[in-house]
Image (cartoon, rainbow, N blue to C red):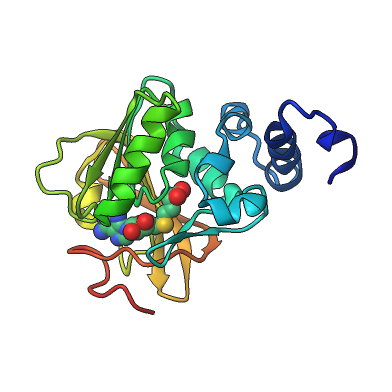
Length: 226
Ligand code: SAH
């Protein structure tokens, strides 16, 4: 229980969510108001498995089943801020998992395509996002590291799983001026890389250290184990 913040019996999750956003998002330096508002809006408790509901607003990833996790709220907010998403943008997320980050992106963008390679997770994310009224997200089952047949361009691409190197097929899907935010490095820990497509090519920079589950696929790792 968190003092005055836990006193609204009508919406205890909303209270927990607002405190989480203050404590783990705003105080840690996320400053983009639209991102902060999106984090206050998306009901994370609806994206975690029933047994994990009490951890929905903890400062950590939450187990999702199939060896995967719902990303840590701070990291979702940080990636969304780095992607600099506008309300008219078309955004691709690779690694939809529960659909939580896709919902945050859907609050910020015009349209979101969220790819997930585990068909069961894709199916449940699709239902969950529809139930919550996110009509601007399309969940696509398949290998998002090299999404054959997916039509670009995208103004922003957020990769929610760790790649061994920048996935070049994804880079090609960026619009000029668009950005991809992708964890790149070893399985145990990665750096978050921001790749921007300019009129003349690509520019990239490292934003900091992260730890994601592996991106498994044609432009990712070739096996899911650690
Ligand atoms: N963004 C998610 C958490 C993602 S965990 C959320 O908020 O819940 C990473 C996800 O990436 C896992 O669900 C995993 O199955 C998926 N994944 C791994 N490799 C992938 C690939 N090549 N294409 C699409 N999804 C992939």
